[in-house]
Image (cartoon, rainbow, N blue to C red; front, side, top):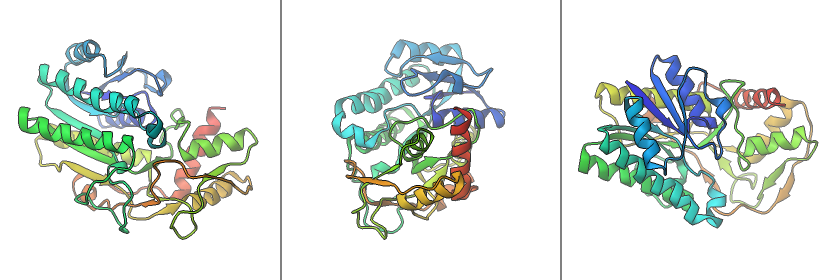
Length: 320
């Protein structure tokens, strides 16, 4: 059995590929390198450079590598930018999903683990988000991820697709010094890049209705996230019961200002963050329960906030 990991040359996808390999599960990567890096793909794992919008490339990859399941991580994932680029967001995340599902149906591939997002919930007004809460995304990105979940649901009815969606919260850290978050929009790389370049890190918005005025998020370690993908894939392979969606959260919120304090402590670089306006599409707080994923996917927070910051910082320093 071979799993296709779309977006497998990216920060999260590359960790998923490593976790699959460690579990003895074969994989092949398809990635257009629009945000990924070929160097992130481990030696010995087949790599196809192509977009999921390229139906012919997806078809040949599924056939040539005898793919039996797909872990779909590829996509345009920048919530704030999606407000300015909605058409691009929908093309990558919705049209891309349709192209992938059509190819899977043509080749009899009936298992899919989908990289969804906490953004499907939007700006929530509860302390802890559970899977069954109403979905009210506040950005085209969140909307596109919710549509992706709907497409999986409907394809399950139409074609017997077995699937689950893993809703990511804020993914940070590194499980391998060779792989780091290189997003130009995510908090950790923005802060580390500023420190490395001698600039002062910036907080986007200090007037949110939170205890210290900065956004509160549920930060999870990328290596823990990758293990959840492996267990979801294993359950699908084994024909075991699986929920349509899982929140991968800690149940604890951490503010952006608290992250800044942790970064200063781990790096030993003292700084006072600059303050700028809010980013469009950012909800004030979103924190989730991971109880359902703990029950079915072995989900656990195996790393502290200090571990997350330390591992991410070491991976960033290794790239200099």
